[in-house]
Length: 325
Image 1 (cartoon, rainbow, N blue to C red):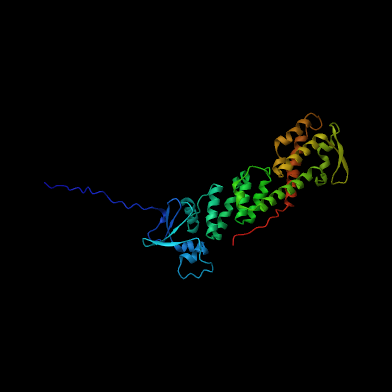
Image 2 (cartoon, rainbow, N blue to C red):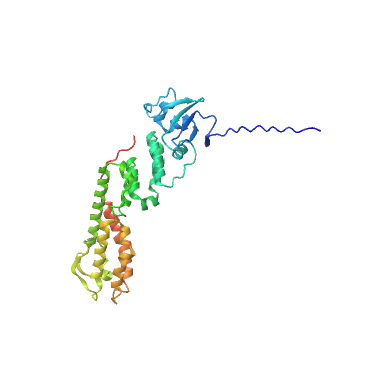
């Protein structure tokens, strides 16, 4: 009877420390990250993305950029290696931009900022231009415009900085402190404060000067009604005539002035809570109650909010930019 001989010698598994797709055996450079990650990469892709790295990585390079002093290339087990101070996740994301792969998904401002920091360190300006659009995602602008402003200014993104400054107007200027302010000069933040104040002045001016009202404004019920209490002052309109105005409308404009002083943007004048008090008073008048809602909706939606945005458009963020070379 034949015997089956079983080899009980333990299998030797050569587990690769590299994660795909950066595990190519033909790679000519290994990147070591601060948290122990390893990436087998091709010098040619990094050299195309970074003129700063080109001199360090490719012998005989004709790149006009000086050799990058922050990089030490060592030879280890037949491969050139570089020790990085960045973590694995940030390094992987930057490499995905260097290679002809799909761009990584960056869902947090912290992630975008880390990627930009690494790209700036290695002079990857072309890649930074591809990433900067992620800063101005609507959710970031709505919820964290001051952070977006500081990050965009830090990296020299002018259009993104100006857009973020516009969105800061939707928030009280002295809101919670954000860490990103540590990376920009005090002068840039001071200019933002000035911008906010000038926008506030421009927007608030609309509440005490009605010359911008449309030519048919006198048809609105707060100019027509003689049954409500009138404000103590009369107001000139664009037709050159002076009109008495219902007090409840002037009270709405005064409340609008108060909120525009703190948050100079069209969004605040559309706040239902701001309008509700005026409509409640108007509802007590048999003349106003039938027309007040429609007239106020037309006034605010088609005129007031638009004029607020126009007023803000006249104010420029006076800040000096220093684009990445």
